[in-house]
Each structure stands twice: as C-alpha cells, then as structure tokens.
Amino acid sequence: MLQFNQISKQFGGLKVLQDVSFTVPQGGIFGMIGPNGAGKTTVFNLLTGLLRPTGGQIVFNGKDLGAVAPHKITELGIARTFQNIRIFKEMSLLENVVVGMHDHLDYGFAGLLFNLPGFRDAEAKARERARELLSWVRLDHKAHLLAESLSYGEQRRLEFARALATEPKLLLLDEPVAGMNPSEKTELMAEIVNIKQRGFTVFLIEHDMRFVMGLCDRIAVLNFGRIIAEGTPDDIKTNPEVIEAYLGKEEA
Ligand SMILES: Nc1ncnc2c1ncn2[C@@H]1O[C@H](COP(=O)(O)OP(=O)(O)OP(=O)(O)O)[C@@H](O)[C@H]1O
Image (cartoon, rainbow, N blue to C red; front, side, top):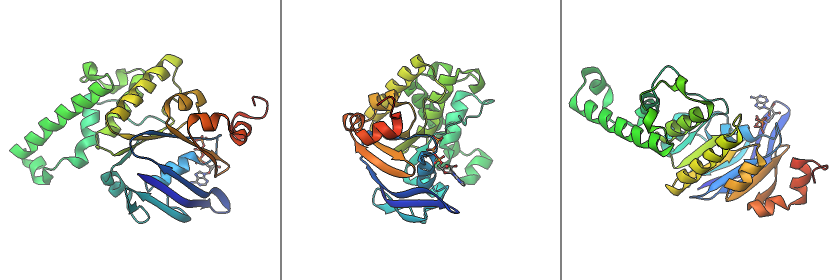
C-alpha cells in the first residue's frame, strides 16, 4: 500500500533520514520504533506532505506523492493523529467528528449558505456517521458532552474517531500511547485491533516497545536516520543490532 524508496531528508547539514526504504502492506498494523530523534516524526511529516524529501520516492497505492499537496494527500486516503492531542475542547464530541468530515461532504457553498435540503441531508448523514465512529471508540454515550470533559485516554480515542472521519485507507498514529497509564494502553490496543479488523491499515510510530511488540504485524526499526531492521515482532526482538541500538547494551 505504501512504499518509501530510498528516502533521504536533510535539514541544512543535518542528515535526518538516509536511504530509508520500507513497505507498509495493506490491511495490517505496521509499527516504526526507534530512539528519540531517530527521525520517526520526520517520516510522518514527509508522508503527509508537511515536508518534502531531499531524495527518493514515496508511493501510495501506486501514486507518487512527490508533488501532491498536503490536503490532496488527505483526499487520497491518508489521515493522522498527533503526539500532542489536537481536538476542539470547547466543542462536543459529535461536533469534533463532524468537523473532521466536512471536507468530504458534498453540498457546496450555496448549500451551506442557504441551508438547502441537500445540505441538511448531508449534515444528517454526517452526524449519523459521526455517531457510528464514536461508537467504534466506545464514546457514543458521551456524544453531546464537551471534549474538555474527557479523560486523557478518552481524548486520544476521540482523536482516532476524528481521523477516521476523513474515511482514510491508511491511518497514521503518532505515539498513540504517549502519557497513558497501563490500563489505558491496554484499552487502546484493543481499539486499534478493532480498527484493523474493520479493514483499515494502521501505521504507527511509538516508543513503547511492549505496546508495539504486542500490536504490530510488522515493525521497522529506525536508528540515526537509517532502517536497521524490518520484520515480524519475533524477528525484531531477537535482532542483535536492534537490541543494542534500541534497548541499550545493558538490557541486552
Ligand atoms: N524542521 C526541522 N529542522 C531542523 N531539524 C529538524 C526538523 N525536524 C526535525 N529535526 C531534527 O531531526 C531529527 C529527527 O527528528 P524526529 O522528530 O523525526 O525524530 P523522532 O524519532 O520522531 O524523535 P521523538 O521520538 O523524540 O519524537 C532530530 O535531530 C530533530 O532535531
């Protein structure tokens, strides 16, 4: 579904990514791990068009993303969540998800302005779908509460529903369990498996080794801007270079 072909990225003299190649297959959960500053967020920023690579090619469903503008990349079916949660706290959960959908509603500016029947239909459908997405993350019973009333773990789940509102083919999760307690992490794992079972492809970057090992079908390990291993959790766990680079010699 997604290929990075020999991607490099430099900021001035700083080589953040070098010759990075990997493939995210359709339908599974793909994880990228690596120490702080390894370049993981840069991978997502390149993928969503926020940054452009210095060299190499990113191909999504056969399309070269080279010259595609960020909003067009969303239209192609890529959505992301962020390390620091980005939801509208003063809006209800339902409104948060509907807003995430708006680019995809097809009623035009006139419809919005004059409250035409087409607009009202589209709004009703959007709210129905938003409720469904909230139920996927077990928040439908709170649909009319303000997002600020949610716990941290719930806010993360709302962010998922918002990202899914754009009907992505590929969902990017940037450190989804950052700041969560163990029980919130376990719940979130179940939710991500759920999302996979509904046919979405998930690509996540994460520090939490246990979480990644327990969840992902395939994992790539980034270290100092290079991929040092790619494979199943078992391949990764036993790879000496990974153990040394990621866990440190002592733990090895
Ligand atoms: N816009 C930028 N300009 C200059 N340097 C940058 C920029 N963005 C990232 N970097 C540098 O690139 C390197 C990789 O950063 P990146 O955020 O991709 O790493 P990361 O693996 O996501 O780290 P973390 O796990 O801490 O989020 C770091 O040294 C960072 O300082």
